[in-house]
Image (tube, rainbow, N blue to C red; front, top):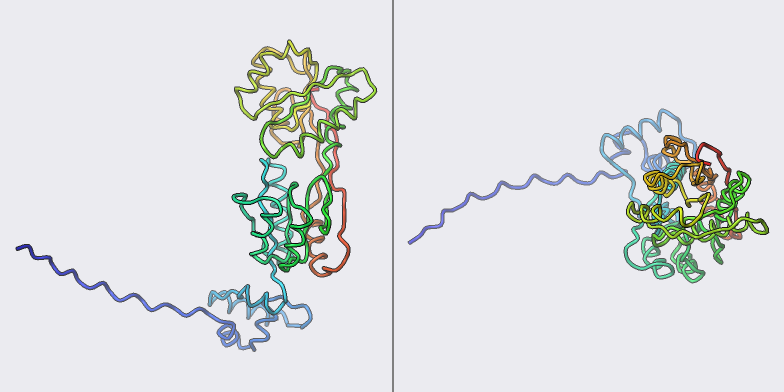
Length: 345
């Protein structure tokens, strides 16, 4: 007979500490609960002395107290959450810096920024998932959202819907990013440098067509009515694909290329140089985005510097729309472009 030894009883769990409340903060700071609320919600309508504010903040920090977001939303009639759906297209350093700048600026205005993943539905269907979180504002990068999705978000309590893309959407504030000007700047520069057989890289990554198509159109627009030709160059962001394109480069008869952006420029330049193609003597190269790595290349990369709105300007637009939700949607053209001539062209 096998005897199962008795295991000692586990020690009793330590009693859970109660969640600190605003009343606890008020007692420790020696003020009323209303004063705690005014200080921690940064209410400007009530004057609170600076020593009292410091005392309340110190008490809250000592107790580990943070205001309850849902309760705050009920009092205000809306949340302070700004939802930014993650882009459905590959993003580079330029957009990442812009997004960080925006988050800092919104934080300074006491909004909480939440990024929503790309998994699941898209467009108007995605708007329903965003609406479940009850954001006060939604900033939608790229295209895909339609008027129905905007209406769904507004019915759920979103006071501002802002789109960043090539077109306006009924009911939403629009920051128009017309990428035609990027291609136009590159095409005009290459023509002025004496190039007449110009290739344009068209990325094959899903989601980038909303940007690559207008950039291609911009090059064509710049060269319309001239003796120059434009050749589309489909290219995946892949070393082997770049090597295959470079291997047949001389058969294409091109003397210049606009590579969509700096990352594709770096990819293609290395492949062309591996094939013994001299830059810029045989082929001039122009990128876009003005990344620091482009300045470190040899030859240094000519590029189109993009002028995006500052995070502060966009944050102020969001705050203005939240405070005055009944005003007509604003539309702003926000993308400028400047050609930076360096060694590669």
